[in-house]
Length: 141
Image (cartoon, rainbow, N blue to C red):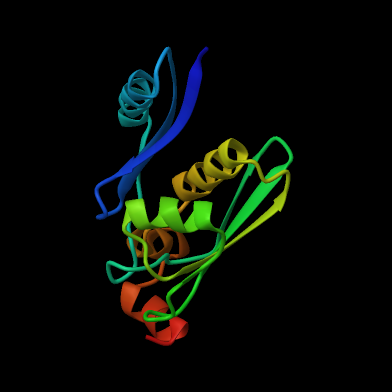
């Protein structure tokens, strides 16, 4: 009998990763999953150390995940899987919605693809040729 695990790791400060592990017993599968997750890290610049700067979307197979930026203090809304991943990443203000096939692996993979596309406020300002102060004013901060 073989066990398979899906492991999500994070430091609760904007860095996290996921991995799959297989083994003859659950402990071995988790250990392999953790090793795989540490090789697959994504770093996200959080807005005011709590949320996302803008809405992002990620796809994996038939699963589409939308992570919406919300005002600071709004909290987290979404499925248990999405909440667990975002908590590991240190994101506390976000809304997550999954469409299509919603098995755990597809949702987690699509979430990490979305988080990899996330840009910081400084990157957005540089692309638009604006100052960060103007962008914060437009967001209503």
